[in-house]
Image 1: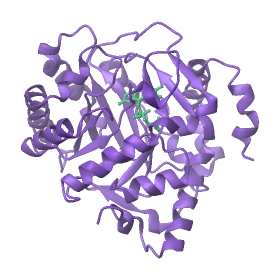
Image 2: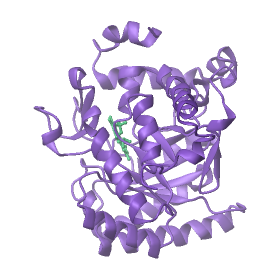
Image 3: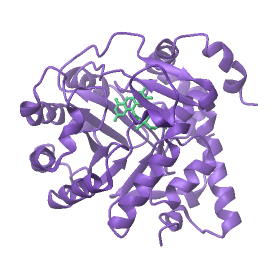
Length: 360
Ligand SMILES: Cc1cc2nc3c(=O)[nH]c(=O)nc-3n(C[C@H](O)[C@H](O)[C@H](O)COP(=O)(O)O)c2cc1C
């Protein structure tokens, strides 16, 4: 049994957000010693067959950290130590905001699930940019941006642009989050007539910023979608993504479909009850785009089988969120090892060869 699984009953005595904040605080303040003691990540599991890339970003393995677990970038320069191939900071909103009142994260241990209604608690894009300036991450860092609650939907574009301006220098890729269920109206930005102006403006500004910052390439941009979209609505998103030349899709955010979990709290459901829904969303996008649209797969990946199946469904790389709460940091290497074992069993030479095999 891993250390984390042994101490999990103790961790679960704490409210989820407190447990999380303690871990993030340690990562932030002691990143130097952590990197030193852990051999700067060199002791985490490595196998060249797991190396891959997504939209030109090279990663040593396809396992990343999902948004929401390092909202302020506090752990950005230690996450390689536990073996992640990349990480995603955010969601960051344009302006600082507190989010919803606590408690706002709830564990459902029997179902290996969480419900959260954080409501984008964020230090704001300027503060997070300042922090990231002082970090030196060893793995690619995505920046996930979302709308400040007080900004009306009609002014959403400006708010996203403000975040993009502030955070652009630190982004290996950018995520436009239009799918969190806890900011009123946010998910209507997934509708074509709202999504088009948002994405086209962000894309244009990204190109300008790449020039200004003398980057030799424009960081790829992804849009993150909800698992609760009907297929036709997902198709509309795909259409707009193509029209605006956005590079790919992250599928999926949490679900508000209460049929997947018998629960007494409101908010987004993640973890085991989401596994199947998220995988179906990835499959749908992969099939609809003939495998030509890069997909980051996230939602209910709790073990190596889930990770394997998500990649087989069409995800080029994957992300872990709730799985870490139940499995601990050891889950990252456990999944990497498990992927290799399954690839050997099935005669798959590299992880790239696995992408979408269930659809082909
Ligand atoms: C506590 C919590 C906070 C989250 N915050 C964000 C967020 O700020 N932005 C975002 O795009 N997704 C956020 N998510 C969604 C996750 O990134 C992920 O899409 C979702 O939880 C499904 O993956 P999982 O089942 O592996 O957790 C959050 C999820 C949880 C559980």
